[in-house]
Image (cartoon, rainbow, N blue to C red; front, side, top):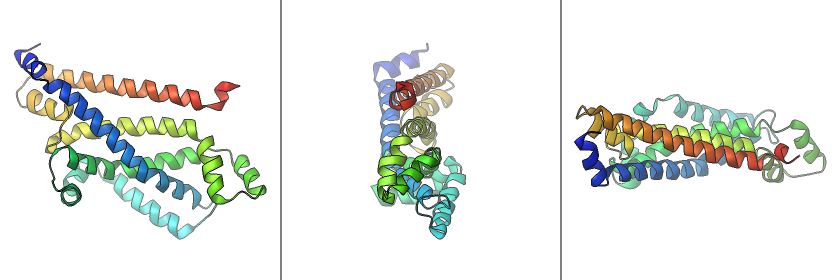
Length: 225
């Protein structure tokens, strides 16, 4: 390793970069799910085959989600700088990056949730409807519990995606490993720093993946039979 690596390690810059990356990823994922989960439920429920079909609402929500999902994250970051400044008072730093990560991730989360809920056996839903179960109860007592393993897998995929977004945020003033890779690796021609950041990101992804898959297996009823 180069002398620069030892300086970054001794000053705690690398350790803090890891913490910033994890912090931005987990907080952004949590907020994205606060917005994306109910949006995904609405997309499922109001679909033509949903428990409460509302065609016009489903189309409007679908268009909004598709618009945000179709914009590359780098372009979305630049476009949403004024929004970040309006929300958190600045367009630089981790606070601004979290706003952008949430705006990019919430539509993605909504589609992941929609996909998971649509995997639920139609017969289970029809049985609940035949017993006079309300739409709200079907969502909370049938759809979400039955789709829990798939929802957890979707959450893992969403978290990893948001992690990759967070590393891009280093290009416009965000912190974390992306910023370290650009500032101390690319701009100073230190390939070892760049590759170290890559390895650290891969390790974080593997930890998220393993924990997520563990909980998904634990909640899968098929594994209890």
